[in-house]
Image (cartoon, rainbow, N blue to C red; front, side):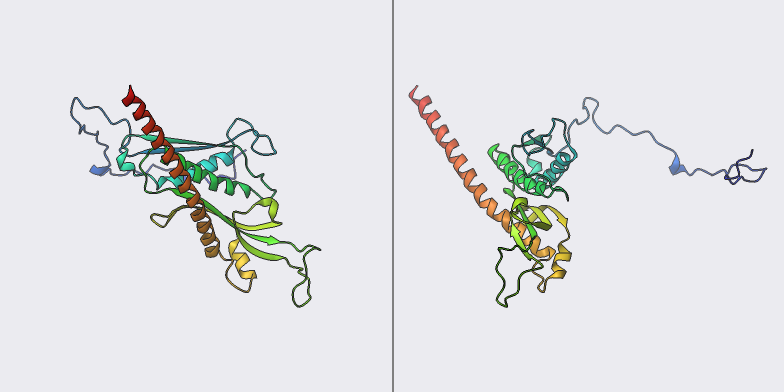
Length: 267
């Protein structure tokens, strides 16, 4: 039985012939280096690799030792946030591998990994501190910050407003460093990696519908731009704590070095 679904061509056919141009012919690559020179093994700039791994006891749901998709996503976001931090031309043919182990994290809710955005903010901050502690040249310290638009549902304990009406729609608030357990519902969350020396956002991750929350309110203070601004303010606050920790660590290192030099001089 013939295949009627296939459209057959004429009975007498011939394949098309094309005239090849001189540029179509492949040429063998020519050797440009010296006879006693080998090819370069590494690239001319610094290579960065970031890994994020949750401890088995980091959340209520016990995790395995095999990397999960959310851990790979966090590693990619962390690498993007830290890439603009290095002066790669000062470290040619070198590599930096950053491994972050999360000991405690917020649990994932039914709507998605809202809590993972706070985890990413902490990973950015601690990775930047580790880079400075290792003595790697960098532009500045990069800090992570997170902000969210939350909806607080009405409760019987909430008093009525001045007009004597009870709150039936709930209140929309813009908060920094949100926690899933403290709010009834999250509308949108934004996490940024902020490089204050250049006033640059090296990483931004927004989840939710920030534009919808801005349209529902009379004022436009809950829009996407305000959400990003509050995340940057949160990162600026974390940067102050990070600088104090780096200062204390540097002072301890200098003190140990001075004591070591004194002991060596006595000997």
